[in-house]
Length: 311
Length: 311
Image 1 (tube, rainbow over the protein chains, first blue to last red):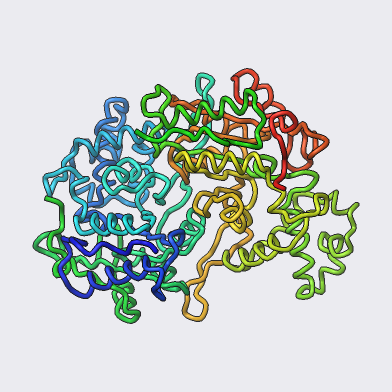
Image 2: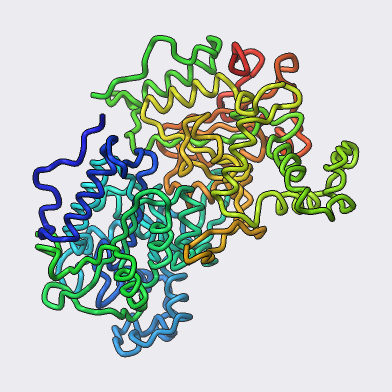
C-alpha cells in the first residue's frame, strides 16, 4: 500500500480552515488505495493557471515588464524606435501612453521582443532578466513574487505522486525560463500561449526560429483543448483565479473520478491587492458564482494564507 | 552516484554488433556522473517515431485498417454510404478502388470515423478495436505487431531515467488508446497528428468534441516544432525510419550535448518486409545518405534483431 500524505508540517503557510482541510483530505484519500476516492498515480494530473494563481499579476503582468525591458535592451539595434510608437513611449518611459497601448500595439511589442530568435536564445534572454530584474512595487526578483502557500501546495502534490502542469495565458517560452527552478515544474509540463516556429538550416544545422504567427492563445476554452492536446487526460485537480480559467475548472469538475477545484480570490489589500477585475486579465465574476454553486474551494488570500510571498 | 545501466540481459533481442554496442555505451555514459558524456536526468528526453519504427506499417498503416473497420461499424447509422464513395468501396470491400483513394477521400474517411465525438468516446472505440481486431497478414492483434527489440529499448531507456516520447504522423488519440499499455508511454508523452477540438456544454457539463479541422500534421519540420511546443527541450536520443523523421533526427544530432540518432532500416524480407518506399509514408532516401555521412546508428532489422515481433 502506498504511503499516504505526510501529517507533519503540511502546507505550513496555510491557515487551518476549510480550504486547507479539504485539500489535505483530498490528497490523503487520493493516495490511500483503501479509499473510495483513491486515484491511481498515472491519473494524478493537476493543472494550475500561473498569473495571479502561482505568482502576482497586479498591478502589471510580469511578462509585460519583461517585454518593456527587452525593448529597451534591443533599442540600440533599432534606431528607428526612437521616433516610432509604440516603441518610443517605452524608450521615453512615457507611462501615460504605455497605459493606453492597444492590443495591436502590444502585439507589435511582443513580436519585436519575443520572435525572430530561437527558443534557446529567447530562454537565455528571459533567464538573465529573471536573475537580475527587480519588481517595481515589491522590490525583489520577480521569481520571489510567487505565492509561498502555492509553492507548498505544488510540493505537497508532487510528493504525493501528482504531476503538476501550468496551463496559462502567459507565453510558454517565458514560463519555461523560470518555472523549473522556481516551481519544480519542467518545460514539458508547461502549456501556454505560443507562437509558431519554423525550422531553418543555419551553418548546416537545424535551427528553430520563433515567428510572430500565433499558434495558440491559451485562455478560456482553449485551455481545455490544450489540456487534451498536450496531456490527453482530464485533470483531477485544477486551480485558477479568473474567469479565463473557468472552462478549465468546469472541465476538471466534470470528471467522473474524484476531483478538486480551487479558486484563488485576491482579497488581500494589505499584503497584495484586492481586485476582481484586472486591466489585462479580465474579471473574476462567473467564477465566484460557480464556485459557490458547485462548492469549489474558494481560497481567501487574506484569511487562508499565513503569508503571501516567501521571506 | 547513480546506478549505471544494468549489465545482465540488456536488449536480449538485439544481436551483438555495432548498433547494440553503441546504444549500450551511450546509455552507460549518460547515466555515469563521472563520464564526460553524462546527461542529467531531466535532459534525458528520447523521441521515437511510431509507424515503421516501433510497430509495423507495411503493407498497410494500422490506422487506415482501423478507419475502414470503423466505417463499417458506423454504416448502419449512415444508409447513404451504400451508394456514396469513398464509403461504398469500403462497405463492398472493393480493394481495387480502396487502393486508389485520393488524399481527399482519405480525409473524408478520417473525418467520418475520427471526429464529431469526444476524445474519450474515440478512445473507447479505438481501445475496443485494439482489443479484438486481427492484423490481416500477421494474424494477431495489432498491438502484437510491435517490434520486440524496440520494446526492450524503450524499457531499457526508461529504467535508466529516460523519458520516452512518441513523435509520429499517426493520430494522437489513436496512439493514446494503446501506447500506455503496449509501450509504457503515457498519453502526455505522445505527440501526433491532431485535429482541433471545441468545447461544448452538454447537460450542464463541459464536453470536448473532436472536429475535422486539422490542428497539426506531425511530419517532417512540424515534428521539430511540436517537440519544441510540447517538450520544450531538445531530445538527446531520436529514432525513426523514414525521411519524414529526418528533421527530427537532424535536430537531435545538432545538440551540443551528447546525443544518439538511430535509423531503422526495413531490410528483412523474410520476417517482415524489405522496402525503402512506402505507399503512404514516403521514402527513406535522404535519411540513409545522412546516416552514413553523420555516423548515425543504422539498424538492419535483418542483421541487428534476433526477432522482429514478440512471441
